[in-house]
Structures are given as structure tokens and as C-alpha cells.
Image: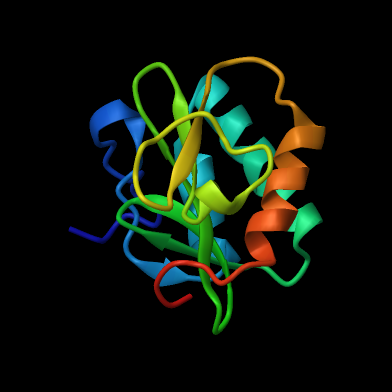
Length: 140
């Protein structure tokens, strides 16, 4: 039987996160976003747009079935992951941001939970710019 020319859709994991292979670049992040549905796709698209606009030299990747954002040689500064009713945007050195994002009790990381609806673009861009300006987590 001939192979189908239609690409298969990624398997959806808990919370509706698509299972996307670990990879660097914009393409796997866009594949992740495209595999989401409804409000989750809208939120992911908006977050990706805000991060790309705030940090033009951003390095994108998919790790652990989540989009990750960093600066080459400086580490990851943010990533997001979906749960059933919200998205969690994590700033890996978020305890250094002003104002400090409200979620989390980890030594360095802080996050915000984003639900369906409009984003506070101005505050998110401020946090994104701050986070990108400090050494991040791991290797990007």
C-alpha cells in the first residue's frame, strides 16, 4: 500500500500539548502551535509573536513538548506549556524580574498562568525583555 502524502497530526498529550520531537528553530515551534486547537492556539500564537517582537534575536526550540525561547550561548529565558484550562508561561530566572511574576516558589523560576482571553501585552513584553537580558537556564 502506498504511503500517504498527508502528514500525520502530532499526538496530543495531557492538557492538549502536541508531542513534537526535540528540535531547534522556528519550524518546530510553529508545528507545535499549529497542532493546538481553539483558544490554546490563539494564546500560543500571541506568546510566540510577543516574544519574537520583544527579542528579535531569539533562539526558538521545542524541548519536553514545550516551546522554549533563549539567546544562543546565554541559555533559555522562557518557555510555555499547556494544561487543560490554562497555559503556564515560565521565566526561568523570573525571581530577578520586576515586578516579580506571581507564580512559583522555586529558587529562580517564576511563572504566570494564562487563561483564554486577551493578554497584558505591555507587562509581558517588559518581562520578556528583562528575562532575555540576563543569563538564562541551561544551554540554548
